[in-house]
Length: 153
Image (cartoon, rainbow, N blue to C red; front, side):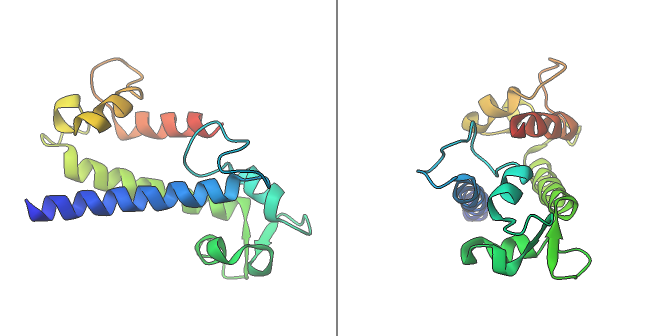
């Protein structure tokens, strides 16, 4: 029981930090959330528009605010000291895949590859079921990925 509460607190804290980081990056100089339709991380193009000072298509640590530099620089897959849009997209995809794997490990009680309303907390069920593209009453990882991609555009 205690382990369950700790896990939930960890997931909620992680999601909260991702939303805060996303809101920080998305601010074009105005208040929180301006210029954004949804919560979550901002579109990669917006990150580059805002921070790629020399417009070379690469983000370097000196172009980024300290509060996000370390996190974004983790995406530097080739170790050249700069992050491209492709590297950032790959890192975002890996993070999303890890999150979905954990979500399904935790809540897919019958291990059928779908999350159904009876397997997840009520607050989460309403949001998840919006991604049920085929209307079968369950949400797969692919349906969630597609819904997340659609939200980002």
